[in-house]
Amino acid sequence: MKKQFLTTAVCLMFIMGAFAQNAGIGTGTGGSLRAKLEVHGVAGSGATNAIFGGAGNAGISLQQNWPTIGFNQYRDIITPGSSGKYATTGYASLFTFDYTTGSAGIEMFGHRSANSFTGAGKSALHVNNVGNIGIGTPALSDASLWVRRTTGNLAAASISGNTHIDQFMYGNKEDVYIRGGLNASRVVINDIPSNKVMIGIDANLSSSLNIYGSVSYSVTEVSANYTIADNDRFIICNLNRDKTRKIYISLPTPNAGMEGRVYTIIGIGIPNLTAPELASVNGGFAEVIGGAVGDRNIYNPQIIPGTGNSQYYRLFCITKKPTTGAPNYDARRSTISVTCINGLWVKTDEDFQFDSEDVQ
Image (cartoon, rainbow, N blue to C red):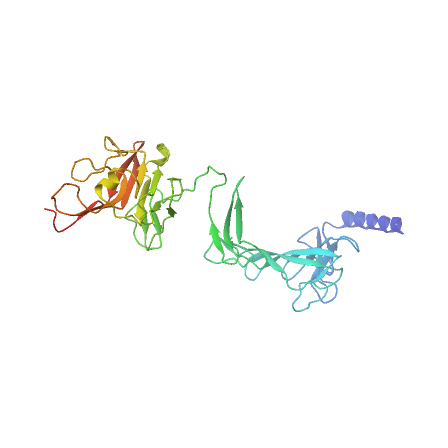
């Protein structure tokens, strides 16, 4: 039977090739003038003109009206809420074009059995008549690309490097994570050629970084010795009013990559000391170690107000001047800021105060 069918098909093709330049099926007399083979009409009440692939095979179909190529899908009947049927058990897809709007799209269908209806599909890709693209959603008229996070997906889009992944609309809160592809990669955001960045405000850029709103920095609280890390900004030294506690804060070794970096060390719970108590180095203070102030090393163990030898790095509180008969006053330093400049940590700010109405 197969040989007979094959012989008939070959003879038919020979006859068509010998006696007709073009051939038509369902086109009426005279054949087609637009193609070698033209098929008019559909099977049943659907839209399928032809299927390539025998029974039980996942072939392709060609469909009219909204011209469609079906993959393991065909349409022999129009059913609301369905995009046709499955040719065989498995998944299905179709690529369709709307000639009335000029848009094209790809739809995907889940796993079902042969000849069952597809149900509603998921829009995988949509292209409108000006070439704008929509992924998971119809394309917008005013955006070249629109990507929507659809149900079941962890993110709307993921862009992967060799180590790290950028995530867009990630998780239930639809967060955005932007990072370099490797551990040492950089993330560069700038306006070319001005190299200016704007956050939270739509206005003319006046500075390299324009921020409209509040800014938060990392805060690290310590009650023991601590070495400042790259991710630190404000370091809180909690002395807890303990006159015997000493906290040593070590600055990292400066390098060219740290140029302009600023750290601020803040003392809280600083106990009230007398000058002799502080000078005896029994405790009650925090020290910042490493760096220089101008041509003077930050580290200077002496701290006696009025002697011209006040150190630049110690956070403390002195309650009384040690000189007999001198007026009483408070001397406090609770904050110091250092900046990396030319490979050195330089003190750029402090809140040294002398508080007394007796000081002349």
